[in-house]
Image 1 (cartoon, rainbow, N blue to C red):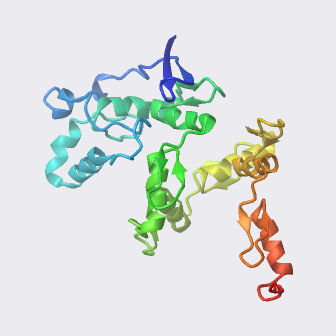
Image 2: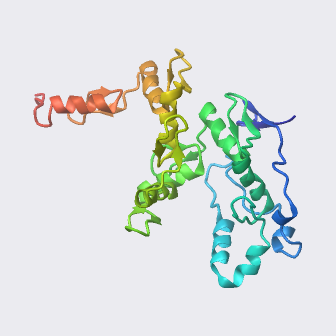
Image 3: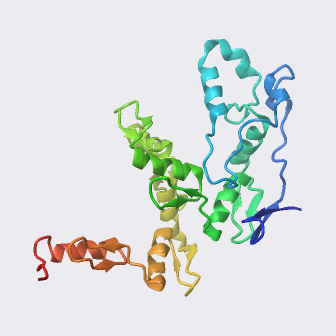
Length: 283
C-alpha cells in the first residue's frame, strides 16, 4: 500500500490517504488516444483541480469547454475520434487520466480513503475537499462578506449571490440559476427524470441528497456525531443546530426587540406572538 499525506498548514495536522490502487481499471487499445493526436503528447498537462493551496479560486474547466466547442464543430470529427473514450458510455475526454478517473464511476473503485472516517473517493481532489470537513478549513473567503468556503465552486456560487449573476439558463422555460447543479435539478422537473432509486422501497428521487436522507430512514444511520456529547444526527444541519447548545450561539435575532434565538423556527414563533408594532417603545 502506498501512503500519501495531505498536510494542513504544512507544520501541523497531517492526514493519511490510503491508495489501494492508483492505476485504476486497465485500459485497452480502443480507449487509448492515437499516437498522431496532440492529446497523446500532452497526457500530463491540462488544468489542475482545486488543491486548496491558494486563497483565491482558480478558473477551471477551460479545456472542457474547448473540448465541447470542438465536438460541436463539424470539422472536429477527426479530433473526436482520437480522444480517449469510455467503452461503457461513449464519453470522451481530453486526457487519459480523466478517463481513468471516469472509469471508476462504472467499476465502483474508490482508492482514496479518509484516515479520519474511512470514507472512500474516486478522485484525490474529492478527498482533499472532504478532509476540510474534519479540519474546518475554509480557504476561500468572500470578498463581499465575512463568509469563507471549503471549495472554490462554493465560493464561486456564493459570490454570484452578491453580484446577481445567473449564468445558467433553462432552455425550456428560461429560468436562470447561480449554479450548474441547480439548473440540472430544475431541468428534471421538466423531463420527469428521477435518477436516484431506493433499493429498499423503490421510491425515486430527483436529488441525491434527498435520496441519501431517505435511505437513512430505512437504515437508521446517523453519520453526524457531536464531538462534545456524542449525540448523532441524520443531517449535518441538525448537528450544526445542536452544536449551538454547546456554543451558546444564537444567530437569529428579532430586529424589533433584539432578542436572539438558536433556530429560525423559534424566531418565527416569536414574531407570530409579537407582531411588529406590538412592542412598547422604551422611554
